[in-house]
Image (cartoon, rainbow, N blue to C red):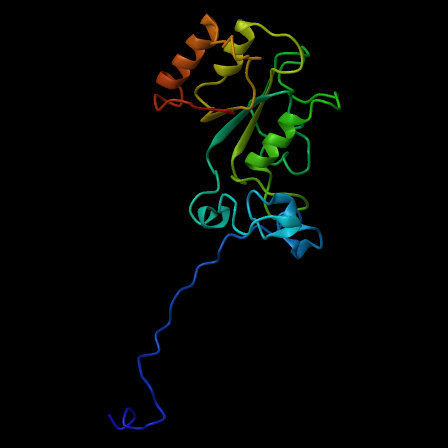
Length: 215
């Protein structure tokens, strides 16, 4: 009471020790300018307003990384190939993998310089955090590369891609689709539709594979 009576003291409270948590802020140079490079490259994860962007117009990644980093989740990238030996992907690219185009079975990589979309998508999903390049939205997820695009393929190929390793794959990411026009919309073929149904109903130990498509 004597202390509180001092007119120079506004308030008093016990000095209690508190635990503070480390916040998950990726230190990759293309995510953060801390690495000496332009962190605005990954504006979709963290928009700082660089290059005329709008601050905070992004997916607000950092708070999510405090709770989920993708650990224990396998994401299949069904696309035109994935460079599974890339320095930013290799630690997470433990598969399983499938190549439906080149006849090389379990290696989804390609030497076609124009087939780089799948590698870019894989990086967005699960590039390793806190290293030399960019960070993925789920930097601890496991990647499976499935090479389907790049040449003609049929309904059976689509079914194999969508139904591959259903006990292991949790999420199937598909940034592709038919050449629809305003007059002709194409649905999945019989085999592909059956694979989708089986994956959604019985995949992932009965919890269902999560299929994600580009709009």
